[in-house]
Length: 248
Image 1: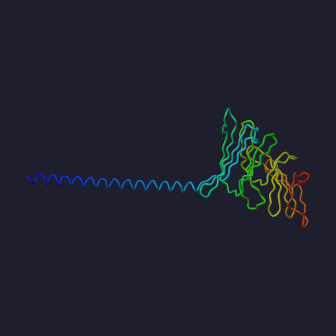
Image 2: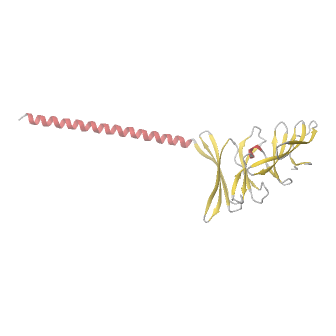
């Protein structure tokens, strides 16, 4: 009879030991899960620090049909790369409806400095903004977006960054650009679709040369003059036939 209490005691001790082991395992698993969650939160925080919005610009009063269109520029950094998002909206009942969106990688160190004005003489304002950094600081690189009234959207001019310091040329009803190098060049171009098509240019370096370009891209030399020593070669022209300089 004495064996029965001893057997019961052994069974109870065995059960308590097993329960203690199970509780210990469960506690260890909880600790491991907690460490994993903390690691995820730390990584998320680190990723957030490596992305940021650098600059924004919004206009809803001047672009396109005034008061009926809105443009939004957003420059943001993702790790070591910078991007620009361009969103264009039209006004609807009680809200703005997005029409089109563009996104580009950019190396521009300067702010947007947007220029909202009419670049194609259709009485609706378009927009340019600084979108890149040129090898020479005097060459301001911009992207041009033209408002297209029929579809009420903006069109990205794909080669506009090849025309630094661009401006609308009222005299020739075109866009001209001013390039600074060892000398300078004034380039005249017309909008066709989503591109600028060059049709004439004036180059000042050792000589002053004036070219006209036909629809097939063939250059024709119109004149060539020797530039006298100490003559200013950094001259921008508003016409090439005859030569006319911009007067500040």
